[in-house]
Image 1 (cartoon, helix red, strand yellow):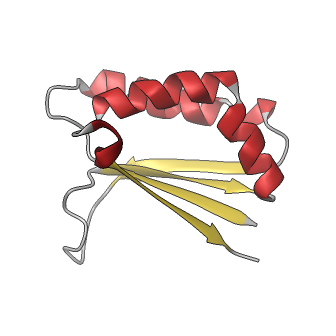
Image 2 (spheres, rainbow, N blue to C red):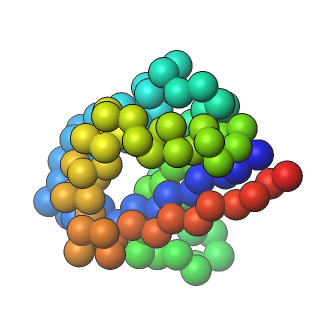
Length: 103
């Protein structure tokens, strides 16, 4: 199982509704990607004070790398991913991705 963890530093001028639309859209792809098991998103509460730059994030659980690649190449993911990059501070620099092999 693969956990695709994405942490976002949105620009202050990006409306909350626009942020929600892109994040929700990424989860809406799930029925179209075999092996995409779950999609969870939310604000970063940063209880330990170790990630203040990242105000939101999402975690996608995939059956395996093949499912992750299918998601990565999905046309809607490509479109929404581009929008997400444009919404983050410094573009790609405002996004951190961690992929975990959870056995």
